[in-house]
Image (cartoon, rainbow, N blue to C red; front, side, top):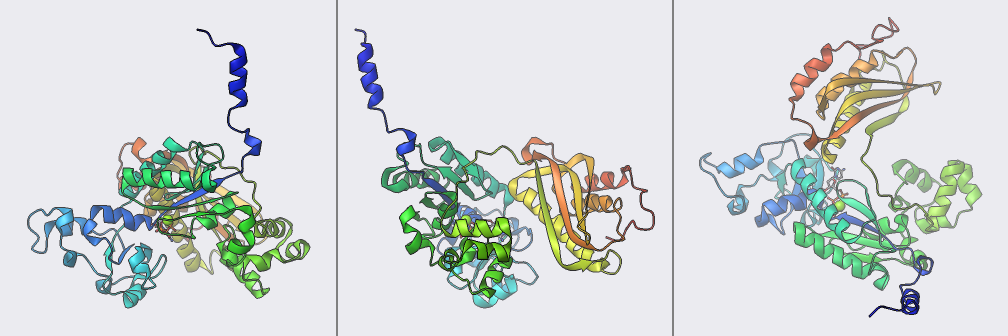
Length: 436
Ligand code: DCP
Ligand code: MG
């Protein structure tokens, strides 16, 4: 029997409501204590204990596997808790990358010096990060989301935005039903928990995902602005950093509500046209930015504006330290995100606001900090360094995913890079610096 066309028409009109009548529902998902949780999968005996991730890449794994007498192989999950290294025994200048929630109860957390943390929680177990493992889980949890909701924006190793608006179930209970499904699927595939905030836009979703951490869901509607968002500190707005936060505090503005109460023109007067207007918008919970399904990044960079202008000769030591730090940060970003690069460059802004950039490509890929320092350092020889500097930046481009290029020893790479002739090396005699 054939279906008459009329019935088809009837079916169409009974289809789900058109897009316009749906609420925009955007989720922000953030993994809980991510690097630490990944370690707990490997060492389940540490569950519920204070654990911090930090310190250099030590051979903790091998030491643990061998046991105290250095002989024999031990299975990871049977290694006694007493054998793990403790914070109280740590000596060095390392900082904590993240901490499990039991460790956070002692006041220990991200970016805290390990020796300082040891005073707060001496018995906390210390493990180094395993970037390969972290990346593997990062890919797995994102793949689990994409099976359920196709519009996902990657925001780094442990967080994503997801557009729930047109996903089946995305509107039910304001997004809670779909959020639960995603949490369940991620847990089944990885054994890891995450927290999800669902809101009318990315701005509010990002704040909401923190409300019920760990393993929580929180749903925010437009009408919740006053009750749930306005009491928060302005620093909870993604984009208001320490400097803007301090300036707002000096102006007597601590909460988002206080920010919303300010006249837009007054904010523009203090922060400039675009930032002032943006602050006013975000304080009122407005954000139209779409969830963009991104392609691969083309470059990764770090830059810093100095507190005071620095001179290449007189402030050489300080500049050199900052430059090295930027290179190591770029290396860290590449490693964390699973990339290697073969073009490295620098950016300088002089005290007259003129900008100079140089870059340098080599025949091998690397994400090694000292190698990047050497290669970017060569670019410095090709820029004038007689004026004071306001800003210094380091950029890596020509990226490839680490698993897509053959393994190469960074030392060999560095040596080759250093020997490569670079056009323009002879420019600006007298102002070139082997300084850095
Ligand atoms: N990370 C880092 N350096 C920092 C902060 C974080 O390398 N200064 C790493 C370690 C974290 C991961 O990034 O595990 C994700 O950062 P989050 O801020 O999301 O922190 P966590 O996932 O660890 O904890 P939370 O449960 O608060 O999200
Ligand atoms: Mg997280």
